[in-house]
Length: 288
Image 1: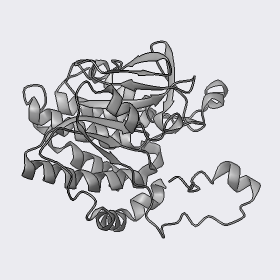
Image 2 (image 1 turned 180 degrees about the horizontal axis):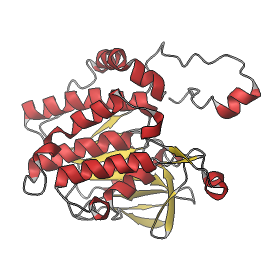
Image 3 (image 1 turned 45 degrees about the horizontal axis):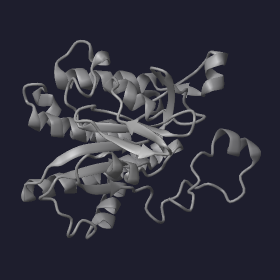
Image 4 (image 1 turned 90 degrees about the vertical axis):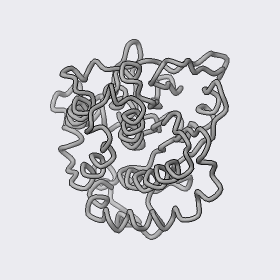
């Protein structure tokens, strides 16, 4: 998915522009809106970029406000860079000029992406048993960008509240429930499964990495008393949860785009065992 998304970036983005045409007609961009960037691999990131361009333009024309941005799995990256631009416009005293061009940084990153810029193989047997790789390279990139956007020399300690970043990351707990990591003020809570769930505070970059810690591939990310994995592992589409968390009504724009029809990984209909184990990780399931 990564290789093909990079190789066919421009063509895929044009295709997503075609798919998006007409889908936002009638959406009330003049009112407060929450946005969810859903799962979908690296091609989903490209789809998210296309959708963001349309949303930013529509909000500018209508005078609306993006209140909160949620990221699930691959959509965590879209959510982070979009939220930085939103926050920079609101609080220029906290953010640098570079933050106003954050989405361009994401597009440039995806355009020239190599696997070693995202993950590194775990050579230690104990860590390999938890996950084949770690997201150290991606974490370093995100820390570098956060430092550039805020001017801090210690980006690893910055929380969502510290920089008023309107971004919430959906992460999967070990018990199968979803946690939400983001700004804790104003408080967002809901009742679900007989318990009260709150949006929890966390360092920004560690939360992003937790939301990207894909099952099997990546070692889980430990934050406080919880061990987290990719948010798509517990709940693919948290739209109901997002609506329940908010203390006030807001419109919800839920972005879920994966590969367009006709796009293929050129996988054979009957792969052999070695290919299943070591190479084939991207069959398309019916719900996608």
